[in-house]
Figure 1 (cartoon, rainbow, N blue to C red):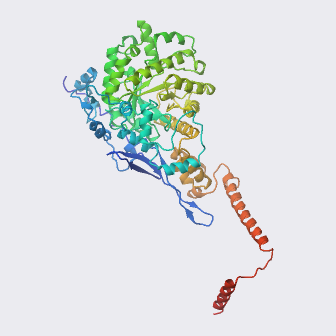
Figure 2 (cartoon, rainbow, N blue to C red; figure 1 turned 90 degrees about the vertical axis):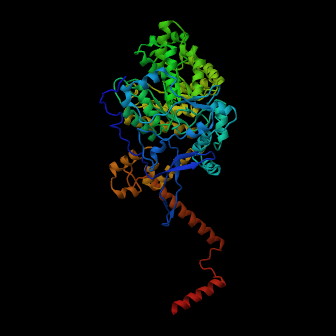
Length: 634
């Protein structure tokens, strides 16, 4: 096919990437023992405490987990048309168990590459894909079970500890509430060996496709920090490649540990390529969506051959985890008949329709072993989809939901037989008193594989505020042991989220995840809270803003009623004013109590000296007084 005369502009002609600046912060790197292990995190500097005597006492900076990659490094100049540096390339090549392919193994990818009509939508630099050499398994689970600690595992250990030493974490934990871990085994400090052992047991996953070397290694498991996923993606109605790349970078700025590209509109292949090459976090997809697009949106026309080709296409691009709805079995579908809201999962409804149309078992279930062979050739992680999750509190914890969950447990054991990393998706809509049962059932039937839930939403009455209704459930299930929480935005059930919706959803879920870590007693989790509380009590307003999850909003709310610069050092806010501020009064009470204690000590000393008003001076003191008087006379 000849060169197209299409004058469509570059997909990123209108993309803008503002620097990911955080106030009073610096990008800090901690090096590991492996070559090129250099772990980025953020350090927030704090102003000193002003003591009653006018002196100042320094406050230690606070380190925070940073998902934004190089985008928050002021020395890095991003070029979205080129993508991020390939952080893991050397590690992957050094293992000598992969090979670079001369051409794609996907027929669709080869046809797309040959079609010059799409040339203007492609990135300037495209890497040749890798796959495992014949007879090799390249998954982190395979390495872990062989007793190998990989650079990815060391990277994660440093990252989870925020580069803090065991002594610092021990001191922090000593003043931290112990928490209730519900059987989780969280150590005082995360070591590379602990990371390896958790992955080997299947209790944690490291989603890191060998074709996504730009991603910074992270881990999902209940004995680690609770993670948050954000969903982006275009639709047939709205959004462009530029908007999706901006949303990706924006999502990492506000704390997305992973991002799912759920694009269902035009140019899905190219959109995904732009996202992957510019993503410092793992990317997940639902391959079924693109497979359905390839057959014109007709579920009945789906086939194993088409789906298989789509898996290879996406694995070669670098997708780190696939949501596969293999647990929706033909026998489960009648169990949904009496539901109030039926089957609400897109993937679940697509496969249910295919099963009924052909009156056959789900081809994702019957071909699951073949899917495992593809996954282990690229180290793609399974996210076993909950296609029968409840879509309303009325349908929570019903037989359809738990029948599928038991099937997901069965599939987990098959995936583990192939050393394929696996985590399990969960609901959905569940009232608060039924949430713990979900976690218990998942641990029981899925053999402690990591759990990943959408919320759950605890009530159905608040469209426009479902980031609140679901954040409540997310905090609870995170406390009970859920490893990753899929965010919900204010637009849930209403429309495709924009950048502001993405931010609001992520803030709500970062709160939920952190609250869960506090409740579990995760070592060092309370450091951030304690720093904020101390700054609040000492009226260090700038530090309060800078320590906030959303510094801009915290500052704006304060300045809305107290805009003057002098108000930044005032010992009150507009809520109580200068006379009724509880913390100001508390400080005065503390100072008074300290003075009272001092007077009490003086009184006791007075009584111990015989209650005499005048005491004889010591010989040395008399001589010194005489010398001072003589000097004064001169």
